[in-house]
Length: 591
Image 1 (cartoon, rainbow, N blue to C red):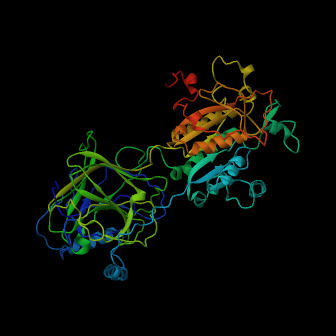
Image 2: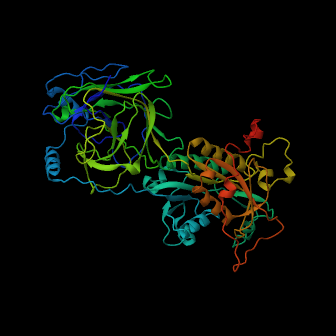
Image 3: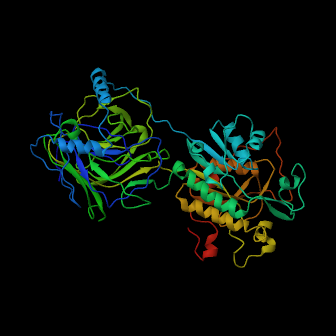
């Protein structure tokens, strides 16, 4: 076990940038752990590093032994091991370019220390609107633009969209039923989605040129499906849309990067990288203790013993596909501390020796604790010196515990000797309180076609004619379930009959899928936009209608418009887990 060594343990887990620091190295056998690869703009990796002392002219090396279920590093006076140096370099994609090494050394000599604040990570709240040419979707686009919020419209017909939305709207053209038409660049910068895609229902006998029957939205006409089937529009499209935006919107429970819980796939291989690459002699090993965590589960250990070296670290080999953590706000680790200060280093380059985005964190001796490192707190550092001219951080990760702080300052908890840092999980997290990232416009009545004892004569046409309309409500409900099961923070809005009336009427929000009535399309658009910014709307499903009865048209006096609504007043009344399916499944309504 490591007690108080001066060597850094470098712990890499995400991608590929191969940073080098003087210290001890850990070797890894992580066959028991798995990891699901995301997609990031550049290659990265995670490092844990703890510096032991200054470069001593000797370059430490990896242990030639790999001990399953134990983590340790052997200490003692050793000579530099060229064979281990050679194997280490080539394991991590070969040695660095000599020209780059010389250039970086010259830069180090000529650069001056800087303690100036650096530019914080840039974030984007770009909203993608799917179904942007529909009755609700085009109003969503218009309102977002009037509010000065960035919006991108996903449409199938570019000419129609330009005519309807204007010449300067950010448009991307793709068919949600065909994933190959949805290019990755369409979703760059997108963190939020409003989905207003809906199957088209129209009168069998046709409509007037200005769609008068469609617009009035209340009077019954003999309906039929126009265009694609409900299964294709409401279910298949939903599944594809969720697949393509999930990595952008993120998961409410975070993205597990290391651990044996969650949706992991593929193996994450860890290998030691210590100061053998700098001429040192440090060495250590990373292994898994199958019952070492606080709850008796598996835990990764990086342990190092003093060996007159500079640093030790462990990291993954470069990923072929970069990690994309742009949907998240930081990295969370569950570690058992030793009372010392460590450093998280995040790299976004695959170069051998490059800028790392860093943050220090303190640990409590002998206690399991959760460490959160916000991406916004990371500062660009190159060889322990702040780099004010570095580009903004682009999410990726490294951990390093160093003898030095920044710009020549010492780590105040540095003590010569061995050290140990067990950790049970590493994940990307979203800040609390969570607000929805995916808002979906569904329909009231989706659970009613199969509800026992329901008087269909008192139900809207879609409920009575669900089968004749290709099981329209059945597939809408299936689409909703995909959202609820996706792990994305969501809001599902179920409007009653949609009208072309203006927004502004008093509203009734309800849950359990029981109400009937009407509501303005413009009002629904405003509700969707408000939900994106409200923690009270997160993970809620609800129905909504106005208080105006069918028989009374609603109008607004332009000289005396109704006041702007605070939709949080309505959202605060909602509860999670109420969908109306409780009656179908024989389950009690959640309290």
